[in-house]
Picture 1 (tube, one colour):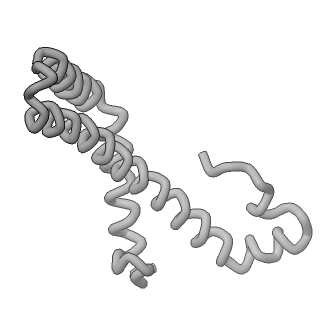
Picture 2 (cartoon, rainbow, N blue to C red):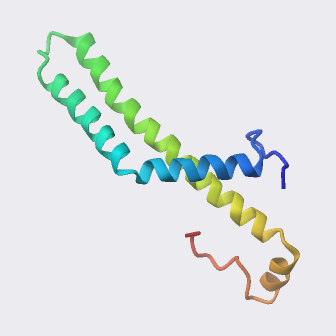
Length: 111
């Protein structure tokens, strides 16, 4: 299945990105590095004076950027899960099972 989806990525690319993002998010090295970076930025922010408005705003935006990066990676994982569900739901044997009440469309989230 090498078709591209609405993001312009092939199923294989979506899977590759999803697996890599899941591995990174689950990596102790990533988690520790991210925590150190966020914690240090917050410490730097706390150590500024209220008069240092631009520096404080810059540090706050830095903390927000860490969260956005993590959210993007989580989105890659979720997109891979959705692609698997869409692929599996489109298989003839699964459509038949769904029609009989035994298929994939059971309302449970993908693991």
